[in-house]
Length: 243
Ligand SMILES: Nc1ncnc2c1ncn2[C@@H]1O[C@H](COP(=O)(O)OP(=O)(O)OP(=O)(O)O)[C@@H](O)[C@H]1O
Image (cartoon, rainbow, N blue to C red):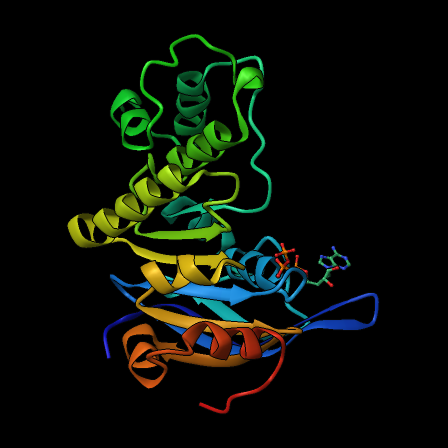
């Protein structure tokens, strides 16, 4: 097993007395893509927020790059790129200015934002304000913001939301490159089975706040050559592990 860079240990989160995350334990190896799969409301966003230290666990611990998610959350936010829920931008500013402001906030100077805008398929938007962007353009900009400071880890909540099939494929290729050429580690959530099947090295299925199954994608494909989709659907519906 490779070096673990993200780990959740018996993470539990309760909102107003209701346990929405229960004893979640999983880990992500350096240089891999981990797909976090679950239905709407399963608890994906909550787990990602707990990892980033944006929420405090009711029990259990989490760490990213060896840093504790509660104690060291500022350091984690500096060394990771993230996209959680609907991205918020300075609407009256251009894509480039939004990225420049983000870099300034991160204390990074002298970075040309154009190459990153090209990488996410947003070249030539010049002074166009973000308020005029389509949903797909906003998502591309959010991905640009997550990667522009060259983080070691990316934590992405539904990163292909709002993208058309061309955009989804382009981002899949980009994510693979970031892993293979820049050694990034990616944890991404999705409720889209095919997206996770196509991109993830490992998959973790979450159902009603519980990790129902963790597996290597290649192994799962071998075990379920003709019924992988049905198998994953049974898991995300809370059907338990009957591989
Ligand atoms: N701040 C909060 N207060 C109360 N309940 C919350 C809060 N945040 C999340 N929840 C509840 O926790 C559960 C998990 O929500 P979460 O957003 O993590 O799911 P998800 O898997 O990311 O869903 P989706 O795919 O729809 O984004 C849901 O029942 C949700 O209503």
